[in-house]
Amino acid sequence: MTVTVRHERSADHAAIAQVIERAFAAAPHASGAEARIVNDLRQAQALTLSLVAERDGAVVGYVALSPVKVSDGTTRWYGLGPIAVDPDCQRTGIASRLMTAAIEELRILGAAGCVLLGDPGFYVRFGFRSLPGLTLPGVPPEYFQALAFGTCCPQGTVSYHPAFGSGRSNGDPASASEPEPAPA
Image (cartoon, rainbow, N blue to C red; front, side, top):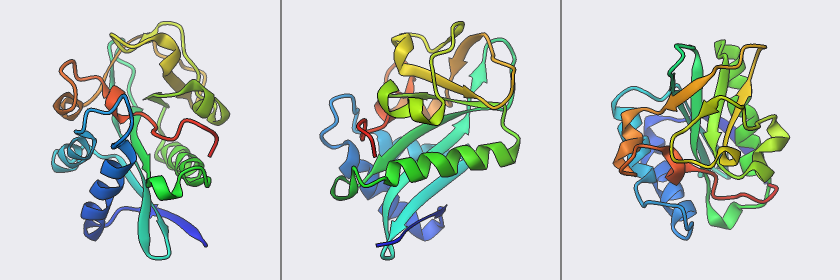
């Protein structure tokens, strides 16, 4: 079965919400608001990239990217999340395909870098790592990771879009981390 990664269409919104809800249903770190976060980002026109993985005409995976603010004033950095794969399709490489496409598209857009919150064992293969001096308050540093597309690495505190506050009281995106931490 062929999997295609493409930009979301308005007709995909309900299917995206279902994939996110199913993927995070049993995740211990989930808040239950992950689909609402994506919808809030969409309504605020804060989704820089919104990609779906489609197999046999059905949406089976999703990844969102939105701008983040860094306290040192660094610009053109983005936050990746949530990323979700339908439980029936996990561990088939779909999350890896979504990650690769998202990184490639960010590079094309001229992004300076990307941050995410998730399992270091999964994201290291894409070049993500903890950067000393780049933090997300209240999060263990090994789980807050970054990928710089150039030589500039920001130093400061990262803030996600306020939509992430709809899922957690402190506004961090922990509830939107990768539900498929093992190799995909």
